[in-house]
Length: 530
Image 1 (cartoon, rainbow, N blue to C red):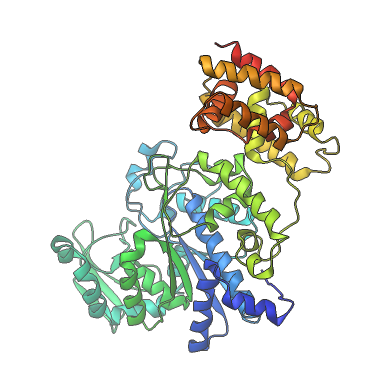
Image 2 (cartoon, rainbow, N blue to C red):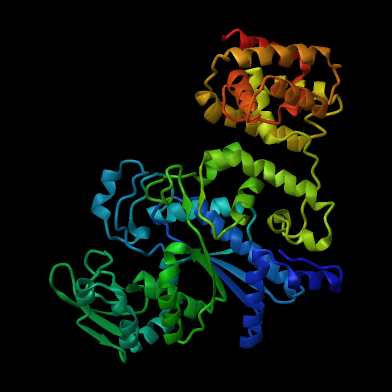
Protein backbone atom coordinates (compact mmCIF):
# COMPACT_ATOMS: atom_id res chain seq x y z
CA UNK A 1 0.00 0.00 0.00
CA UNK A 2 2.87 2.34 -0.74
CA UNK A 3 2.67 5.64 -2.56
CA UNK A 4 5.57 7.32 -4.26
CA UNK A 5 4.92 11.08 -4.54
CA UNK A 6 6.64 12.48 -7.60
CA UNK A 7 7.63 15.94 -6.37
CA UNK A 8 8.17 17.87 -3.12
CA UNK A 9 5.20 20.03 -4.16
CA UNK A 10 2.99 16.95 -3.94
CA UNK A 11 4.19 16.38 -0.39
CA UNK A 12 3.52 20.01 0.46
CA UNK A 13 -0.01 19.73 -0.86
CA UNK A 14 -0.58 16.62 1.23
CA UNK A 15 0.64 18.49 4.31
CA UNK A 16 -2.11 21.07 3.81
CA UNK A 17 -4.86 18.74 2.54
CA UNK A 18 -8.15 19.08 4.43
CA UNK A 19 -9.61 15.63 3.74
CA UNK A 20 -10.22 13.86 7.05
CA UNK A 21 -7.74 10.97 6.42
CA UNK A 22 -4.95 13.53 6.12
CA UNK A 23 -6.08 15.30 9.28
CA UNK A 24 -5.83 12.03 11.19
CA UNK A 25 -2.56 11.01 9.54
CA UNK A 26 -0.91 14.28 10.56
CA UNK A 27 -1.68 13.47 14.20
CA UNK A 28 0.13 10.14 13.84
CA UNK A 29 3.14 11.81 12.19
CA UNK A 30 3.44 14.19 15.15
CA UNK A 31 3.02 11.30 17.56
CA UNK A 32 5.92 9.35 16.07
CA UNK A 33 8.08 12.47 16.08
CA UNK A 34 7.56 12.57 19.86
CA UNK A 35 7.90 8.85 20.57
CA UNK A 36 10.72 8.11 18.16
CA UNK A 37 9.01 4.93 16.96
CA UNK A 38 10.16 3.67 13.59
CA UNK A 39 6.95 1.78 12.73
CA UNK A 40 3.34 2.95 13.00
CA UNK A 41 0.78 0.43 14.23
CA UNK A 42 -2.87 0.81 13.24
CA UNK A 43 -5.54 -1.35 14.85
CA UNK A 44 -9.21 -2.14 14.31
CA UNK A 45 -11.39 -4.25 16.58
CA UNK A 46 -14.06 -6.81 15.77
CA UNK A 47 -16.51 -8.52 18.11
CA UNK A 48 -17.39 -11.90 16.53
CA UNK A 49 -20.65 -12.29 18.46
CA UNK A 50 -22.37 -12.15 15.07
CA UNK A 51 -21.52 -12.20 11.38
CA UNK A 52 -19.40 -9.30 10.13
CA UNK A 53 -21.45 -6.38 8.84
CA UNK A 54 -20.68 -3.30 6.79
CA UNK A 55 -19.75 -1.36 9.90
CA UNK A 56 -16.89 -3.78 10.46
CA UNK A 57 -15.72 -3.31 6.89
CA UNK A 58 -16.06 0.45 7.23
CA UNK A 59 -13.68 0.55 10.15
CA UNK A 60 -11.00 -1.30 8.19
CA UNK A 61 -11.60 0.71 5.01
CA UNK A 62 -11.42 4.04 6.81
CA UNK A 63 -8.33 3.03 8.77
CA UNK A 64 -6.70 1.97 5.50
CA UNK A 65 -7.42 5.43 4.09
CA UNK A 66 -5.69 7.05 7.07
CA UNK A 67 -2.81 4.62 6.74
CA UNK A 68 -2.32 5.53 3.09
CA UNK A 69 -2.44 9.25 3.87
CA UNK A 70 0.25 8.61 6.49
CA UNK A 71 2.45 6.95 3.85
CA UNK A 72 2.12 10.01 1.63
CA UNK A 73 2.93 12.43 4.44
CA UNK A 74 6.05 10.47 5.41
CA UNK A 75 7.23 9.96 1.86
CA UNK A 76 6.58 6.23 2.29
CA UNK A 77 9.63 6.03 4.56
CA UNK A 78 7.92 4.85 7.76
CA UNK A 79 6.73 1.21 7.77
CA UNK A 80 3.20 0.56 9.00
CA UNK A 81 1.16 -2.41 10.16
CA UNK A 82 -2.59 -2.85 10.44
CA UNK A 83 -3.88 -5.39 12.95
CA UNK A 84 -7.51 -6.50 12.78
CA UNK A 85 -8.12 -7.78 16.28
CA UNK A 86 -11.00 -10.15 17.06
CA UNK A 87 -12.28 -10.28 20.65
CA UNK A 88 -13.20 -13.94 20.17
CA UNK A 89 -12.44 -14.92 23.77
CA UNK A 90 -15.43 -12.89 24.91
CA UNK A 91 -18.22 -14.95 26.46
CA UNK A 92 -21.41 -15.37 24.43
CA UNK A 93 -23.75 -13.26 26.54
CA UNK A 94 -26.82 -13.74 24.36
CA UNK A 95 -27.77 -15.96 21.46
CA UNK A 96 -27.77 -14.07 18.11
CA UNK A 97 -31.15 -13.88 16.43
CA UNK A 98 -29.81 -14.48 12.92
CA UNK A 99 -28.24 -17.95 13.25
CA UNK A 100 -29.70 -21.37 12.41
CA UNK A 101 -31.55 -22.97 15.35
CA UNK A 102 -30.76 -20.30 17.98
CA UNK A 103 -32.29 -22.45 20.76
CA UNK A 104 -29.52 -25.02 20.31
CA UNK A 105 -26.93 -22.45 21.41
CA UNK A 106 -28.55 -21.52 24.73
CA UNK A 107 -26.64 -24.15 26.70
CA UNK A 108 -23.37 -22.57 25.56
CA UNK A 109 -24.07 -19.10 26.98
CA UNK A 110 -21.01 -17.47 28.59
CA UNK A 111 -18.56 -19.84 26.95
CA UNK A 112 -15.82 -18.03 24.98
CA UNK A 113 -16.96 -17.58 21.39
CA UNK A 114 -14.16 -19.88 20.25
CA UNK A 115 -15.68 -22.63 22.44
CA UNK A 116 -19.28 -22.23 21.19
CA UNK A 117 -20.21 -24.83 18.52
CA UNK A 118 -20.55 -23.45 15.03
CA UNK A 119 -24.30 -23.29 14.17
CA UNK A 120 -23.53 -22.90 10.47
CA UNK A 121 -21.86 -26.30 10.12
CA UNK A 122 -18.78 -26.87 8.02
CA UNK A 123 -15.19 -27.33 9.08
CA UNK A 124 -14.86 -24.38 11.46
CA UNK A 125 -14.04 -25.35 15.04
CA UNK A 126 -16.44 -22.87 16.65
CA UNK A 127 -18.87 -20.01 16.18
CA UNK A 128 -15.99 -17.58 16.76
CA UNK A 129 -13.73 -19.32 14.23
CA UNK A 130 -16.54 -19.24 11.66
CA UNK A 131 -17.18 -15.53 12.11
CA UNK A 132 -13.47 -14.75 12.03
CA UNK A 133 -13.20 -16.63 8.73
CA UNK A 134 -16.12 -14.66 7.28
CA UNK A 135 -14.39 -11.43 8.25
CA UNK A 136 -11.08 -12.48 6.68
CA UNK A 137 -12.80 -13.68 3.53
CA UNK A 138 -14.37 -10.30 2.98
CA UNK A 139 -11.29 -8.26 3.85
CA UNK A 140 -9.26 -10.45 1.49
CA UNK A 141 -11.81 -9.89 -1.28
CA UNK A 142 -11.16 -6.17 -1.02
CA UNK A 143 -7.41 -6.65 -0.99
CA UNK A 144 -6.81 -5.01 2.39
CA UNK A 145 -3.28 -5.26 3.73
CA UNK A 146 -3.76 -6.42 7.34
CA UNK A 147 -2.71 -8.92 9.99
CA UNK A 148 -5.49 -10.88 11.67
CA UNK A 149 -5.21 -11.33 15.43
CA UNK A 150 -7.32 -13.54 17.70
CA UNK A 151 -7.80 -12.69 21.38
CA UNK A 152 -7.98 -16.41 22.15
CA UNK A 153 -4.58 -16.95 20.54
CA UNK A 154 -2.99 -13.87 22.10
CA UNK A 155 -4.18 -14.68 25.63
CA UNK A 156 -3.40 -18.40 25.42
CA UNK A 157 0.00 -18.04 23.74
CA UNK A 158 1.32 -15.63 26.35
CA UNK A 159 1.54 -12.57 24.11
CA UNK A 160 -0.38 -10.58 26.73
CA UNK A 161 1.26 -12.18 29.78
CA UNK A 162 3.64 -9.35 30.57
CA UNK A 163 0.91 -6.72 30.60
CA UNK A 164 -1.52 -9.00 32.45
CA UNK A 165 1.04 -9.43 35.22
CA UNK A 166 1.42 -5.67 35.24
CA UNK A 167 -2.39 -5.39 35.54
CA UNK A 168 -2.30 -7.64 38.62
CA UNK A 169 0.27 -5.32 40.14
CA UNK A 170 -1.79 -2.25 39.22
CA UNK A 171 -5.11 -3.81 40.25
CA UNK A 172 -6.04 -1.11 42.76
CA UNK A 173 -5.22 1.70 40.31
CA UNK A 174 -7.37 0.09 37.63
CA UNK A 175 -10.24 -0.33 40.10
CA UNK A 176 -10.02 3.39 40.98
CA UNK A 177 -10.57 4.18 37.30
CA UNK A 178 -13.36 1.68 36.79
CA UNK A 179 -15.51 1.93 39.93
CA UNK A 180 -16.69 5.52 39.41
CA UNK A 181 -18.05 4.49 35.98
CA UNK A 182 -20.31 1.80 37.50
CA UNK A 183 -23.55 1.70 39.46
CA UNK A 184 -23.54 0.78 43.15
CA UNK A 185 -24.70 -2.79 42.56
CA UNK A 186 -22.08 -3.44 39.91
CA UNK A 187 -19.35 -1.87 42.01
CA UNK A 188 -19.91 -4.49 44.69
CA UNK A 189 -19.00 -7.39 42.40
CA UNK A 190 -16.81 -5.80 39.73
CA UNK A 191 -13.34 -7.01 38.81
CA UNK A 192 -11.33 -6.15 35.68
CA UNK A 193 -10.28 -9.82 35.56
CA UNK A 194 -12.73 -12.35 34.15
CA UNK A 195 -11.56 -15.85 35.07
CA UNK A 196 -12.31 -18.80 32.84
CA UNK A 197 -13.89 -21.44 35.07
CA UNK A 198 -11.56 -24.46 35.34
CA UNK A 199 -14.67 -26.65 35.69
CA UNK A 200 -17.19 -25.31 33.15
CA UNK A 201 -15.00 -23.29 30.81
CA UNK A 202 -17.37 -20.32 31.11
CA UNK A 203 -16.28 -16.68 31.36
CA UNK A 204 -17.16 -15.68 34.94
CA UNK A 205 -18.27 -12.26 36.09
CA UNK A 206 -17.34 -12.67 39.74
CA UNK A 207 -15.58 -10.56 42.40
CA UNK A 208 -12.01 -11.34 43.37
CA UNK A 209 -11.28 -12.84 46.78
CA UNK A 210 -7.60 -12.08 46.32
CA UNK A 211 -5.20 -10.70 43.74
CA UNK A 212 -1.62 -11.75 44.34
CA UNK A 213 0.59 -9.47 42.28
CA UNK A 214 3.77 -11.23 43.34
CA UNK A 215 2.54 -14.67 42.27
CA UNK A 216 0.53 -13.32 39.37
CA UNK A 217 -2.66 -15.12 40.47
CA UNK A 218 -6.27 -14.35 41.29
CA UNK A 219 -8.58 -16.20 43.66
CA UNK A 220 -12.35 -16.35 43.18
CA UNK A 221 -15.43 -18.49 43.82
CA UNK A 222 -16.32 -20.82 40.94
CA UNK A 223 -19.88 -21.57 39.81
CA UNK A 224 -20.18 -24.57 42.13
CA UNK A 225 -19.06 -22.55 45.16
CA UNK A 226 -15.52 -23.90 45.26
CA UNK A 227 -12.60 -21.52 45.69
CA UNK A 228 -10.19 -21.41 42.76
CA UNK A 229 -6.79 -19.80 42.30
CA UNK A 230 -5.46 -19.42 38.76
CA UNK A 231 -2.63 -17.48 37.12
CA UNK A 232 -3.61 -14.37 35.19
CA UNK A 233 -1.38 -15.61 32.36
CA UNK A 234 -1.69 -18.36 29.76
CA UNK A 235 -5.33 -17.80 28.82
CA UNK A 236 -6.75 -18.52 32.30
CA UNK A 237 -8.39 -15.09 32.44
CA UNK A 238 -9.41 -12.33 30.12
CA UNK A 239 -10.07 -8.70 30.94
CA UNK A 240 -13.40 -6.92 30.99
CA UNK A 241 -13.92 -5.15 27.71
CA UNK A 242 -13.05 -1.62 28.91
CA UNK A 243 -9.77 -2.62 30.59
CA UNK A 244 -9.12 -4.95 27.65
CA UNK A 245 -9.12 -1.97 25.29
CA UNK A 246 -6.44 -0.18 27.29
CA UNK A 247 -4.44 -3.35 27.94
CA UNK A 248 -4.33 -4.20 24.24
CA UNK A 249 -3.15 -0.70 23.34
CA UNK A 250 -0.37 -0.96 25.90
CA UNK A 251 0.65 -4.51 24.93
CA UNK A 252 0.74 -3.86 21.19
CA UNK A 253 1.90 -0.23 21.35
CA UNK A 254 -0.96 0.90 19.10
CA UNK A 255 -0.63 4.32 17.45
CA UNK A 256 -4.10 4.73 15.93
CA UNK A 257 -7.52 3.20 16.41
CA UNK A 258 -10.93 4.46 15.39
CA UNK A 259 -14.19 3.41 16.98
CA UNK A 260 -17.89 4.22 16.95
CA UNK A 261 -19.58 7.00 18.88
CA UNK A 262 -20.93 4.45 21.37
CA UNK A 263 -17.35 4.15 22.67
CA UNK A 264 -16.74 7.89 22.94
CA UNK A 265 -17.64 8.31 26.61
CA UNK A 266 -15.41 5.35 27.51
CA UNK A 267 -12.37 6.56 25.56
CA UNK A 268 -10.86 8.38 28.59
CA UNK A 269 -11.17 5.12 30.55
CA UNK A 270 -9.35 3.19 27.84
CA UNK A 271 -6.65 5.86 27.75
CA UNK A 272 -6.08 5.93 31.52
CA UNK A 273 -5.81 2.15 31.76
CA UNK A 274 -3.37 2.09 28.86
CA UNK A 275 -1.26 4.67 30.66
CA UNK A 276 -1.47 2.80 33.99
CA UNK A 277 -0.16 -0.31 32.24
CA UNK A 278 2.83 1.55 30.88
CA UNK A 279 1.56 2.39 27.43
CA UNK A 280 0.85 5.59 25.55
CA UNK A 281 -2.79 5.89 24.47
CA UNK A 282 -3.14 5.92 20.67
CA UNK A 283 -4.61 8.63 18.51
CA UNK A 284 -8.39 8.24 18.22
CA UNK A 285 -10.98 8.88 15.55
CA UNK A 286 -14.64 8.62 16.56
CA UNK A 287 -17.14 7.92 13.80
CA UNK A 288 -20.91 8.11 13.90
CA UNK A 289 -22.99 4.94 13.94
CA UNK A 290 -24.88 3.51 11.00
CA UNK A 291 -28.66 3.32 11.15
CA UNK A 292 -31.09 0.91 9.52
CA UNK A 293 -34.19 1.89 7.53
CA UNK A 294 -36.03 2.62 10.78
CA UNK A 295 -33.31 4.87 12.13
CA UNK A 296 -32.09 2.28 14.65
CA UNK A 297 -28.44 1.40 15.23
CA UNK A 298 -27.38 -1.59 13.15
CA UNK A 299 -26.40 -4.64 15.17
CA UNK A 300 -24.53 -7.86 14.34
CA UNK A 301 -26.81 -9.88 16.60
CA UNK A 302 -30.04 -8.42 15.20
CA UNK A 303 -28.85 -8.59 11.61
CA UNK A 304 -30.64 -5.32 10.72
CA UNK A 305 -29.28 -2.94 8.13
CA UNK A 306 -27.28 -4.22 5.18
CA UNK A 307 -24.85 -7.09 5.12
CA UNK A 308 -21.61 -6.87 3.22
CA UNK A 309 -22.75 -9.38 0.61
CA UNK A 310 -26.07 -7.60 0.09
CA UNK A 311 -24.43 -4.32 -0.90
CA UNK A 312 -22.10 -6.12 -3.29
CA UNK A 313 -25.04 -7.90 -4.93
CA UNK A 314 -26.43 -4.58 -6.12
CA UNK A 315 -23.43 -2.27 -6.42
CA UNK A 316 -19.68 -2.08 -6.74
CA UNK A 317 -17.13 -2.24 -3.92
CA UNK A 318 -16.04 1.26 -4.86
CA UNK A 319 -19.51 2.66 -4.15
CA UNK A 320 -19.40 1.07 -0.71
CA UNK A 321 -15.99 2.62 -0.07
CA UNK A 322 -17.41 6.01 -1.05
CA UNK A 323 -20.23 5.56 1.47
CA UNK A 324 -17.59 4.91 4.14
CA UNK A 325 -15.42 7.89 3.13
CA UNK A 326 -18.18 10.48 3.07
CA UNK A 327 -18.92 12.37 6.30
CA UNK A 328 -17.83 9.69 8.76
CA UNK A 329 -18.79 11.85 11.72
CA UNK A 330 -22.43 12.06 10.61
CA UNK A 331 -25.01 9.35 11.36
CA UNK A 332 -26.18 7.81 8.08
CA UNK A 333 -28.87 5.37 7.07
CA UNK A 334 -27.28 2.19 5.78
CA UNK A 335 -30.03 0.62 3.73
CA UNK A 336 -30.79 -0.40 0.16
CA UNK A 337 -32.11 2.99 -0.91
CA UNK A 338 -28.72 4.67 -0.39
CA UNK A 339 -27.04 2.46 -2.99
CA UNK A 340 -27.98 4.20 -6.29
CA UNK A 341 -26.85 7.62 -5.10
CA UNK A 342 -23.48 6.29 -3.95
CA UNK A 343 -22.94 4.46 -7.24
CA UNK A 344 -23.57 7.59 -9.29
CA UNK A 345 -21.62 9.84 -6.94
CA UNK A 346 -18.61 7.54 -7.25
CA UNK A 347 -18.50 7.86 -11.04
CA UNK A 348 -19.07 11.62 -10.81
CA UNK A 349 -16.06 11.97 -8.50
CA UNK A 350 -14.04 9.73 -10.82
CA UNK A 351 -14.91 11.84 -13.86
CA UNK A 352 -14.03 15.06 -12.03
CA UNK A 353 -10.70 13.75 -10.79
CA UNK A 354 -8.87 13.91 -14.15
CA UNK A 355 -9.62 17.62 -14.63
CA UNK A 356 -8.84 18.77 -11.09
CA UNK A 357 -5.76 20.54 -9.82
CA UNK A 358 -3.55 18.38 -7.57
CA UNK A 359 -4.74 20.05 -4.37
CA UNK A 360 -8.35 19.28 -5.28
CA UNK A 361 -7.45 15.73 -6.26
CA UNK A 362 -6.28 15.11 -2.69
CA UNK A 363 -9.75 16.16 -1.47
CA UNK A 364 -11.51 13.90 -3.98
CA UNK A 365 -12.90 10.69 -2.39
CA UNK A 366 -11.63 8.51 -5.25
CA UNK A 367 -8.04 9.41 -4.41
CA UNK A 368 -8.54 7.84 -0.98
CA UNK A 369 -10.67 4.95 -2.25
CA UNK A 370 -7.96 3.93 -4.74
CA UNK A 371 -4.91 4.74 -2.57
CA UNK A 372 -3.83 7.65 -4.73
CA UNK A 373 -4.24 5.97 -8.11
CA UNK A 374 -7.85 6.24 -9.35
CA UNK A 375 -8.57 4.42 -12.62
CA UNK A 376 -9.71 6.12 -15.80
CA UNK A 377 -13.26 5.00 -16.49
CA UNK A 378 -15.72 6.25 -19.10
CA UNK A 379 -19.24 5.96 -17.68
CA UNK A 380 -21.62 7.51 -20.23
CA UNK A 381 -24.84 6.36 -18.52
CA UNK A 382 -25.66 6.78 -14.84
CA UNK A 383 -26.88 3.99 -12.59
CA UNK A 384 -30.12 5.84 -11.86
CA UNK A 385 -30.68 6.25 -15.59
CA UNK A 386 -30.16 2.51 -16.12
CA UNK A 387 -32.70 1.78 -13.39
CA UNK A 388 -35.22 3.97 -15.17
CA UNK A 389 -34.39 2.34 -18.48
CA UNK A 390 -35.13 -1.06 -16.98
CA UNK A 391 -38.32 0.32 -15.49
CA UNK A 392 -39.59 1.94 -18.68
CA UNK A 393 -38.74 -1.01 -20.92
CA UNK A 394 -40.26 -3.46 -18.42
CA UNK A 395 -37.44 -5.80 -19.35
CA UNK A 396 -34.71 -7.33 -17.22
CA UNK A 397 -32.94 -8.78 -20.24
CA UNK A 398 -29.42 -7.33 -20.53
CA UNK A 399 -29.48 -7.59 -24.30
CA UNK A 400 -32.60 -5.43 -24.46
CA UNK A 401 -30.94 -2.77 -22.32
CA UNK A 402 -27.83 -2.85 -24.45
CA UNK A 403 -30.06 -2.44 -27.49
CA UNK A 404 -31.28 0.89 -26.10
CA UNK A 405 -27.73 1.90 -25.25
CA UNK A 406 -26.51 1.11 -28.78
CA UNK A 407 -29.43 3.06 -30.28
CA UNK A 408 -28.18 5.99 -28.20
CA UNK A 409 -24.55 5.43 -29.30
CA UNK A 410 -23.80 2.70 -31.81
CA UNK A 411 -20.14 2.59 -30.80
CA UNK A 412 -20.85 1.34 -27.25
CA UNK A 413 -20.68 -2.40 -26.58
CA UNK A 414 -20.21 -4.56 -23.48
CA UNK A 415 -16.73 -5.34 -24.73
CA UNK A 416 -15.48 -1.75 -25.00
CA UNK A 417 -17.45 -0.55 -21.95
CA UNK A 418 -16.99 -3.37 -19.39
CA UNK A 419 -17.64 -1.03 -16.46
CA UNK A 420 -20.99 -0.02 -17.95
CA UNK A 421 -21.78 -3.68 -18.55
CA UNK A 422 -21.09 -4.38 -14.88
CA UNK A 423 -23.43 -1.52 -13.99
CA UNK A 424 -26.17 -2.99 -16.19
CA UNK A 425 -25.94 -6.23 -14.21
CA UNK A 426 -26.27 -4.35 -10.93
CA UNK A 427 -29.19 -2.30 -12.27
CA UNK A 428 -31.13 -5.38 -13.34
CA UNK A 429 -30.73 -7.03 -9.93
CA UNK A 430 -31.52 -3.85 -8.00
CA UNK A 431 -34.61 -3.13 -10.10
CA UNK A 432 -35.94 -6.67 -9.72
CA UNK A 433 -35.60 -6.71 -5.93
CA UNK A 434 -36.27 -3.12 -4.86
CA UNK A 435 -37.94 -1.10 -7.61
CA UNK A 436 -40.35 -3.47 -9.34
CA UNK A 437 -42.13 -4.61 -6.14
CA UNK A 438 -42.95 -0.99 -5.27
CA UNK A 439 -43.92 0.39 -8.67
CA UNK A 440 -47.41 1.95 -8.58
CA UNK A 441 -48.72 3.59 -11.72
CA UNK A 442 -51.54 6.09 -11.55
CA UNK A 443 -53.84 7.62 -14.10
CA UNK A 444 -53.24 11.26 -15.10
CA UNK A 445 -55.77 13.91 -14.16
CA UNK A 446 -57.29 16.13 -16.84
CA UNK A 447 -54.54 18.76 -16.87
CA UNK A 448 -51.80 16.13 -16.77
CA UNK A 449 -53.39 14.21 -19.61
CA UNK A 450 -53.46 17.36 -21.75
CA UNK A 451 -49.82 18.08 -21.02
CA UNK A 452 -48.82 14.48 -21.72
CA UNK A 453 -50.61 14.59 -25.08
CA UNK A 454 -48.84 17.85 -25.88
CA UNK A 455 -45.50 16.26 -24.96
CA UNK A 456 -46.27 13.25 -27.13
CA UNK A 457 -46.96 15.52 -30.10
CA UNK A 458 -43.96 17.77 -29.44
CA UNK A 459 -41.61 14.80 -29.35
CA UNK A 460 -43.00 13.71 -32.70
CA UNK A 461 -41.97 17.04 -34.18
CA UNK A 462 -38.37 16.73 -33.00
CA UNK A 463 -35.67 15.09 -35.12
CA UNK A 464 -34.90 11.49 -34.07
CA UNK A 465 -31.40 12.49 -32.97
CA UNK A 466 -32.47 15.42 -30.75
CA UNK A 467 -30.22 15.70 -27.74
CA UNK A 468 -31.28 15.66 -24.11
CA UNK A 469 -31.10 19.43 -23.65
CA UNK A 470 -33.37 20.09 -26.62
CA UNK A 471 -35.88 17.55 -25.36
CA UNK A 472 -35.69 18.95 -21.82
CA UNK A 473 -36.49 22.43 -23.16
CA UNK A 474 -39.70 21.04 -24.67
CA UNK A 475 -40.60 19.33 -21.39
CA UNK A 476 -40.14 22.64 -19.54
CA UNK A 477 -42.14 24.57 -22.13
CA UNK A 478 -45.10 22.21 -21.99
CA UNK A 479 -45.11 22.13 -18.19
CA UNK A 480 -45.10 25.94 -18.01
CA UNK A 481 -47.81 26.31 -20.64
CA UNK A 482 -49.96 23.80 -18.74
CA UNK A 483 -49.70 25.97 -15.63
CA UNK A 484 -47.84 23.61 -13.32
CA UNK A 485 -46.75 25.58 -10.26
CA UNK A 486 -44.32 24.61 -8.95
CA UNK A 487 -42.92 22.99 -12.08
CA UNK A 488 -41.67 19.99 -10.11
CA UNK A 489 -45.31 18.84 -9.92
CA UNK A 490 -45.14 18.30 -13.68
CA UNK A 491 -42.05 16.13 -13.38
CA UNK A 492 -43.59 14.24 -10.47
CA UNK A 493 -46.60 13.50 -12.67
CA UNK A 494 -44.31 12.23 -15.45
CA UNK A 495 -42.57 9.84 -13.06
CA UNK A 496 -45.74 8.58 -11.40
CA UNK A 497 -47.77 8.12 -14.58
CA UNK A 498 -45.02 6.84 -16.90
CA UNK A 499 -42.56 5.08 -14.55
CA UNK A 500 -44.71 4.18 -11.54
CA UNK A 501 -42.45 5.98 -9.06
CA UNK A 502 -42.18 9.33 -7.29
CA UNK A 503 -38.73 10.29 -8.53
CA UNK A 504 -36.86 9.84 -11.75
CA UNK A 505 -34.08 11.01 -14.05
CA UNK A 506 -33.59 14.25 -15.92
CA UNK A 507 -36.40 13.56 -18.33
CA UNK A 508 -34.78 14.94 -21.48
CA UNK A 509 -31.74 12.73 -21.04
CA UNK A 510 -33.96 9.75 -20.34
CA UNK A 511 -35.89 10.27 -23.61
CA UNK A 512 -32.63 10.68 -25.53
CA UNK A 513 -31.42 7.32 -24.21
CA UNK A 514 -34.74 5.49 -24.36
CA UNK A 515 -35.51 6.84 -27.81
CA UNK A 516 -38.15 9.31 -28.94
CA UNK A 517 -40.40 6.67 -30.53
CA UNK A 518 -40.26 4.44 -27.45
CA UNK A 519 -40.91 7.43 -25.19
CA UNK A 520 -44.00 8.42 -27.21
CA UNK A 521 -45.31 4.86 -26.80
CA UNK A 522 -44.68 5.13 -23.07
CA UNK A 523 -46.75 8.33 -22.96
CA UNK A 524 -49.62 6.66 -24.83
CA UNK A 525 -49.57 3.82 -22.31
CA UNK A 526 -49.81 6.37 -19.51
CA UNK A 527 -52.68 8.18 -21.20
CA UNK A 528 -54.53 4.87 -21.62
CA UNK A 529 -54.70 4.59 -17.82
CA UNK A 530 -56.93 7.65 -17.68
